[in-house]
Structure formats: C-alpha cells, structure tokens
Amino acid sequence: MKYEKPQKGNPHGLTINQHSFPVASIMRFAKADGCVSVYLIKQNKEISAKPDDQLFCAKRTFNQHAESGYMKEIEDKYQVLAEAVVSWSVKTITAKERPIVTDMFAILNIRAHRRENPIEGYKIDVIDLARHYTKNEQEQLEKNHIEFIKSNFSIPDRHLSYLHGLINLIEVRKQMNDSQWGILRSSNGQFIVPDNFSNGMILPVSPTICFYSQRNDDVIGVDEVAEINKLAIDSSKNYFFANDLSKCPR
Image 1: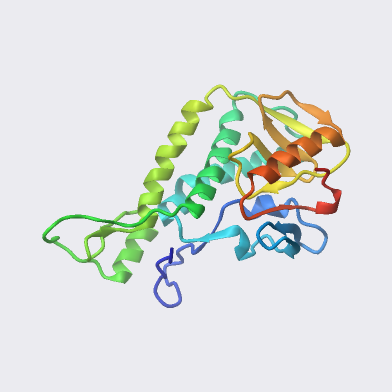
Image 2 (image 1 turned 135 degrees about the horizontal axis):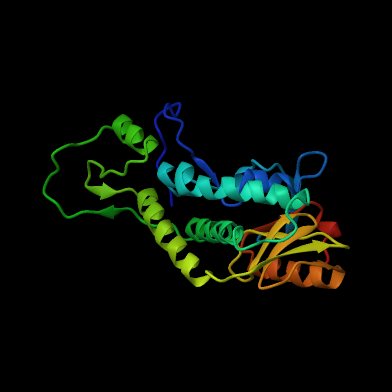
C-alpha cells in the first residue's frame, strides 16, 4: 500500500522511514565496517546493510504521535537498559525492568505486523465538516500529535495504526504481566535477529546476548544458541540478520 508523502522538503520533519527494529539496536550488531550481515529470504542471498538501510523500515506506517510519542518512550527506556546489560551494569532483569523488555518486545511485533498488514484509511459517512485542513495544516497537527480528519472525510491509515498499536500494547501488557526475562549470554556462537518475533519469546540484544522469556539468567553453548537461532529464522518472513551469519549456529 502506498504511503502518503509529506509536502516537498518535509518542512515539519515528519518521520517517513520508520524502523521496525531500532537503529540503535541494529548498531550493536554491526561489524567494524558499520554493516550487519542480512539474509534475504525470498531472494535467497546474503547482503551487507547499514543500520539505517530502508530494508529495515516501513514507510510512514504509524503517525508522528506514535513515532515520537509512546514508541519513542519505550525505545528510550529499552536502550538504556540494553546498554546496561551489555556493559554488565545490569546482570539480571528484575520486576522493575521486566515491563521495559515486554514493551519493547510488544512494539517490535506490532510494527512488524502492521508493516505486513497495513490498515486502510477509513472514510466517515458525514455530510460536511466545519473545517477543511490544508495539507500544511494537517502536517502541523500531526507534528503536534493531534489526529485529524482529511477533507475527503477519511481518517489516515497511520492514525488508525497508532490507535490499534496502543490497543495491542495494552493487550500484550496484560498477557505478559508476569513474564520473566532471562539474560542469556553465549559462550560460543552469535545470535540471529528475526524481522519479527511472533514465533518465539526472544529478543536479541547483541551478537552474544539475548533476552529470553521464562528463562533464568544463563551462559549457554553452541547447541542452545542454535535452537534460539532456529526460532528466529522460522519466525522471519522477509529477512534476518546478525553481526556475522557465518558465526551463527543453526
């Protein structure tokens, strides 16, 4: 489905390329050249890609309210925690940190699902509105996290995605309220990152660190890393990536 392009030059700085997996997270997997190894499933080939590559993005799937609102808040908290885990400042996920990992896990799946299953804009059955907003006014409203109805009486798909995303997030929080997240560190082999996390309660943090639901903190060997990587591959629809796929048992 085509996305709605902003005005020429994007004067209000609306986010167009929206990452499913955050740039900061992808960067933790980058090699010295700044790239990650990506396997393209449909093309059956491996490529190198920068963390900001459009391969990892959807085009304006969510509105700015989601992008720089609740999703950014979740990402910011998660990145602080992830850095603390990588540096060993945090050695276990306590009840305080569990919601941070759960929220991140939730929005990654919400983004991936909506990227593959975009919502159509909804037209309202009305006769007229008191005010028709110009495109510039619409973008100003969106920049300030205000939803609107377009002059053709339709609600943009990205606004509906924002609302559906919030509802989905609330549901995941309820379902995973008591989830435990263990920190798994690999002694041999690297972890693979899927393009969605629907088939496994895993969340790779770095080439050798992975959050795993309902597990205790542990150091695992090549066989268990391979099992987790198989989950990641089976979950992926279009691609999966790693620091170096040749070092990922599967």
